[in-house]
Image 1 (cartoon, rainbow, N blue to C red):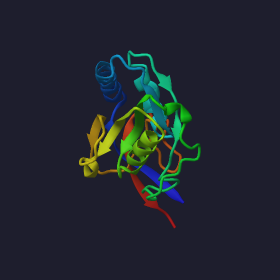
Image 2 (tube, rainbow, N blue to C red):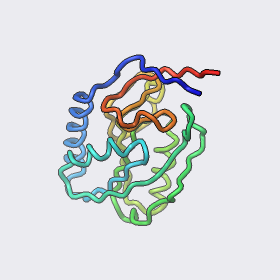
Image 3 (tube, rainbow, N blue to C red):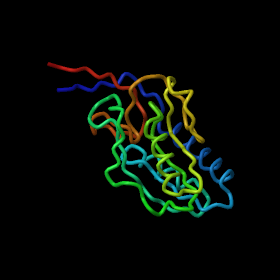
Image 4 (cartoon, rainbow, N blue to C red):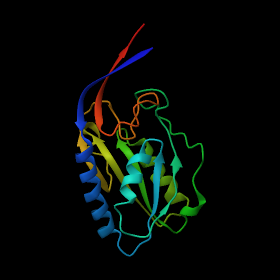
Length: 177
């Protein structure tokens, strides 16, 4: 059994929304003339992506993909599961892959190469958060660099819980016997 305790709010709702606004403007400017195929990575990236696409002033298509490497754990399994497979509609498209957090890099790296192999013309990546230990990992658009702490809220979860929190909080995980 687990008892979740929050140590502090890392990013409040206003900070998150302001950064999403500026990311949307940057993406609009840099992808001008394109019709991006926005691919949110479910489940964690769906809340971020739903706010982000409303700040992108371009015609887009939305094509979610389901991917997981964490399951019910707080650390990556090292394997990426794609239960829905790769959407065939990416061929000859300019893709914007949207995820909640860049931690190990497994999800973005694997999906980027998989989408290119499936015929995507280009693949750009956008993450809301990048952990400090992952600062050597590339994403085209990064919302916030954060400390190496386990965070929940705004789409990020622990064992399926806390995705609905409007802010991002640091979580202390205590395992009880």
